[in-house]
Amino acid sequence: MSVRRLAEKQPESFAFTPENEAWAKQEIAKYPPGRQASAIIALMWRAQLQNHYWLPRPAIELIARILDMPYIRALEVATFYTMFNLEPVGRWHVQLCGTTPCMLCGAEAIKEVCRDRIGDEQQVTADGVFSWIEVECLGACCNAPMVQINEDYYEDLTPQNFAKLLDDLAAGRPVKVGSQTGRIGSEPLGGKLTALTTLYGEDGKGPAAAAETQAAEEEAHIKAVLATLPKDASAEQKADAVGQRPQGLEQPRGNQADDLQRIKGIGPVNARNLQALGIYHFDQIAAWTREQIRWVGTYLSFPGRIDREQWVAQADNLAHGGKGLKDEAAKGQPDA
Picture 1 (cartoon, helix red, strand yellow):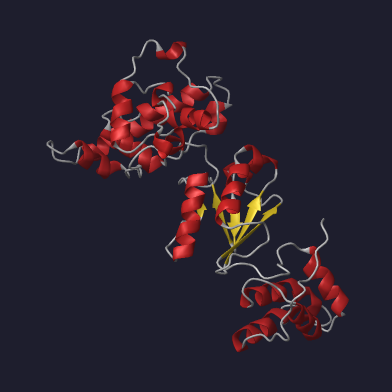
Picture 2: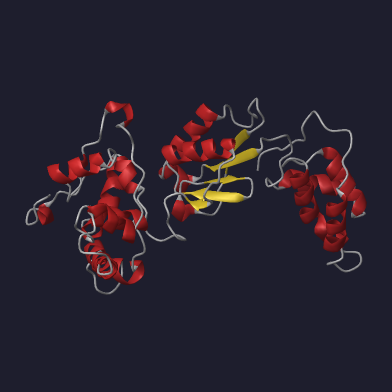
């Protein structure tokens, strides 16, 4: 635990708003006589929210008086728990997890975005909008890398979607809390799989069996939806009926597209078709949600194939410097 001190500059006073004062009385009443100090964390958190997300000395002193406890005990609580910010922070305070799982999944790249877009750690931007700090585990390791911004978690981050998240917050636009790639809970990348029974269960068939199962389910679902459309529906109309088109780029970043043909299942034709959709890079494919996988697979006229050939997992591996999977299994099935 690092040493935590109060900010040098402090407001002269602090008082709860009438609404928060009434709330505090209700909170204290939850505890039996003589145990009112048990409400200290709740009251400090409320004071922090009222005071632009940081806890000043006058608020700590006020809460100690309200709870009839020594000021030093209240100060001990405030300085022990890192949930309390002891100096001014930005309107949006970014807590970036730098613990091992997040570090291995790309937290260093997210940290660079913070440095470029916000500045030095624990500094508030000139407009008062942002500040950031690196913290220990925030408990969402399966969806690493991730950050906590004020009271919400934002997971499955990439430098691109994190930069966009900051832009949207600064502009006051709505943002998506939770996974930024559409994952639900901590399901595997690329969508829900029967991970325990298929990947590591008794059948012993491994990831290929799971991919085949996922592909068959997708094909059946999409076939049922397409059966309700007019026979002359266009490829885009069919795709829109089953999924959501992924957002493409106008041109490759740095005018240098990734070699998408390194992904098993993508040959010259599919590479050109994907680029026509603005898909130029591995990390774009790695970030596809279930709805986007359905859209692309239907648009390219082979629903289920993206799952069967594990495009998303391959792209994620390649985006992080790994190798493609054009192995012996691909020889019997020419790439399109």
